[in-house]
Image 1 (cartoon, rainbow, N blue to C red):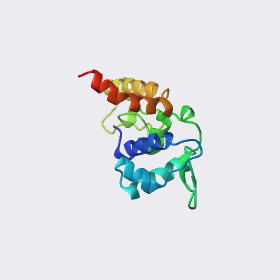
Image 2: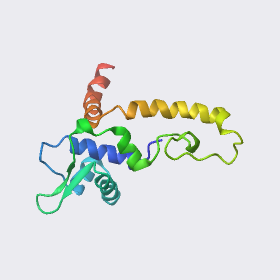
Image 3: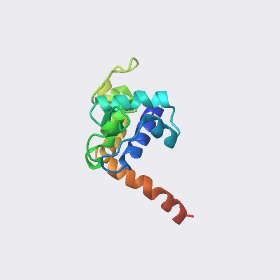
Image 4: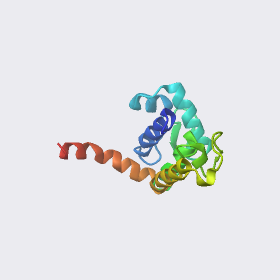
Length: 149
């Protein structure tokens, strides 16, 4: 499940992707525009900066911006950065595998096998979706809702 941290991080990245080239935004501005608690957003943006997804600049013309074009930022990487593995349970994770306490045979456990399929489906979508595509879906959503009425 996507946590609030992951959701807020994605909302902030969409906000930053909509800026013009060379523009930056302060944390307070992003927080207000997206209804995100500023202190929580500070932590999120710092993590995204530390992993190279964002860059920051101090001073009156400072703020945050994307470190590379939205076409080069993968949504799967963003979610893993903020929320950890994509797997719904630890025993289905490729990067943080842990055997369940109640499982005697993980290789044949039907829950693990099924959740690994779920994890693979999620990863296939998120690891192939760029921030640019994510933003485009966000911009297309209102018109789809109106057309579907």
